[in-house]
Length: 198
Ligand SMILES: [Fe+2]
Image (cartoon, protein in one colour):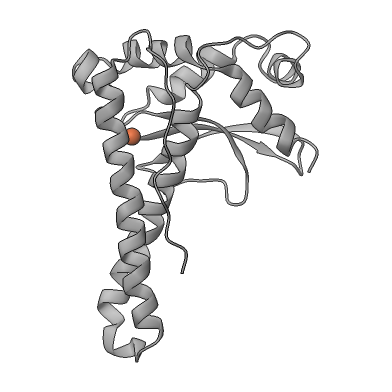
């Protein structure tokens, strides 16, 4: 059984997202890693015993494990997008060309509208290597509504904990604007270039 270790992120000072908010948020991320490990440990015990005896506990843990895993992975995608500091795409980036072709200059507005949907979750941009196009979506909490098997190239956390401290309960829009202001598009571009040739 693999035991995960929380990743360490090198996040510069951000505009509109405080250091305290980031530190608290990373604490939540570490909780997902810890819970995933704990649940996996318990499940590996059940797997070596009479699992029927533990049927109820097992079904609860199996459901919770993917919730914890998705929380872990999505937060890793999220925090690494701030590493290295804000940077823009250039017109020669293949991602910039794809976004322009598919969204005619409206990508950021469209993605922000998804982020402002009600309820806790994640606005996500995937790449579909079969259709060879981007797919934007919203994952409720962090595990509902994913496009199975598709790689995620942009991840925006819109749970209240991401913005409550800095912007208040009605501050989701200000937070989403701040998120885009601080994005290192170089990270997103790198993800895209890795999956675009699959
Ligand atoms: Fe979060």
